[in-house]
Image (cartoon, one colour):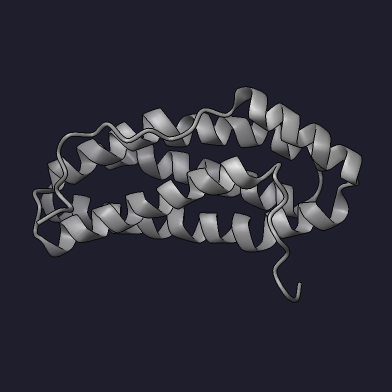
Length: 160
């Protein structure tokens, strides 16, 4: 799509969420490098997913994606990615030790790729396709329901 566009204010809160999603991935990877017990990593993923990712996915699907046609290929792709991430998350609790570490790696890769897809393709596409009036309306709707990420997890396993 060429040179990236400046992010429209309608997408800024969600892009900020994506920053924290990438931090989740980084933190889990830091934990892996420090040989942190897999259960500690999983506990953080559970906390982050239920407190931040689930509401984020809900906001995207109930507000943002409604500005796209239901049969839009990018919308279908991103909704499919959401389902795959949710499924992978639910399955994490089934695994222990080394197998859990492998599944956490896969989950983190999936989350990172998904965020990159939304930031580099989906939002760029929407900014080009939506009318200014629609973007302004979307901005108001996102602002009305978005809850910023607040990090209150005490086990900072990713720090020395």
